[in-house]
Length: 337
Length: 293
Image 1 (spheres, rainbow over the protein chains, first blue to last red):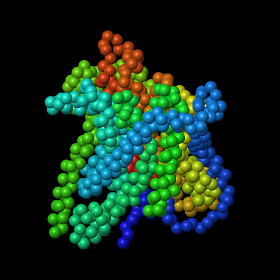
Image 2 (cartoon, rainbow over the protein chains, first blue to last red):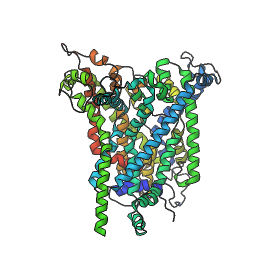
Image 3 (tube, chains in turn red, orange):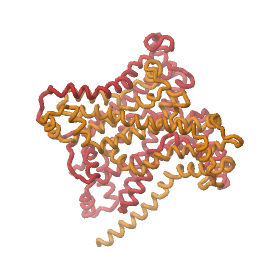
Image 4 (cartoon, each protein chain N blue to C red):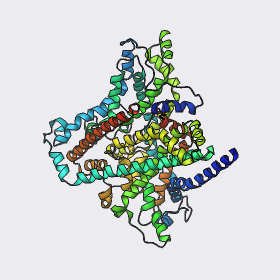
């Protein structure tokens, strides 16, 4: 027997279960086809009018900037504007990739995002599995809330936390090291520590979020499956391996692919606030997004920043399309588009 | 037999509770250290550094902020304004966008969906956006620059659309038979029936708006327009701004602890609301599938 759950059905049903009414909402996909209505109906115009504010906002803030992609192929000068600036072909890209910065920021972005993903997924699945075993509802809820709490904290404050922990003179970690009779460490001037630090920070912030997702998936599994597993003499390990994990597999796939699709996009706030543009540690912490903002704000270098931005947007787009194609092949129901 | 199984389950749960305890503590320790620091005497804080318990308890930092509250008060007002106005506008813009998408009788629903969701896949990048906002829209140092770019989040639109779709079509048809126009059906039937989804999206928007520092970093230079998060960001390096505004004459600014006190005041609303609205967030995550990061 094949065990699978429809991800969207799960998501539509869950809130209803949560609020006590266990009505079955039709799933977004896979619902029986409705009788086809007239293609044009008198409601088209009012509905279009209704959506105008949203359409305008999306157009201005998402589509107009897309036209600005041409900037990557121009030598922008403020005086002549976007369309008046001279074309330079691929010179900006050539400059970017020969400057040495490109490889550093691309490597950091992809490598760190990959580590973030592995850490977050593995840990949150483990924690969710554990929480799922706690039958004291109060404790389980309390733990889930505590783990979820960091999700609500802004990265500016995360930056404060990191600073309070790691600053060289009075940081909490150094205080502990001194108390243990060890040397203080100048965290903000040694690049080699920061891969681990950033992974920890990202995990701290994201663990609860994914735990909530996986736990919701696990709670939705019918107890009958576990009973059946026990009838067949399965141990707890078997239950986890042959019931729980197969059930949340679609969730895992979706989470991983969504993250992979955005692997070229660093979480700007995380990097900017924890690293704070500290020159000594940029070797391991500089990512595309921080590089672009620094080029723009500090150096005023629009050309390289634009080239880096386009490179990122194109790579990101290709990856999303590719990962979606993969999902579609494995599991068409869960494809995003 | 049955009892044995129960006990075994209990035992396992107890072990898990103990195993997960350090993880939970680790989630809260950073917050605790900031709170402890904000209540520590400034001189001791700079001498002893950050500790779990204040080496010398002091309310100096909070007193300072109350005596000379201009700076943080202005930032609080800006953040409050952007959060409240932004949430209302965002809910309006996104629900009016999601509702037509969900209507099966709407001819352009697929075009519209593609138009909105394509932006999740591809974007122009920061540089064109920056030039557009500063040079063409002239929104630099305008408070609405902190709101407008955040109004339509395709993930939330998706969430709302999914919810609207779950509402029975017959309801809309019946209302239409009774002579209600689309706007009326939307406002008097779809919206009231969708309060759980709207509440969830509203809360997600509130959090995004309150916690945002990126937009201020890029587009706000004027200190009177700094939102709270950005003010805090600028303070971690220097206490220049606090000292600028200081008329706390005679004594030196207790800048280390004041900074931490401001951080606590910035978390306070989030912390308080967290206790009440957390379950809506849980619902939001599981309702709409997954958000990007």
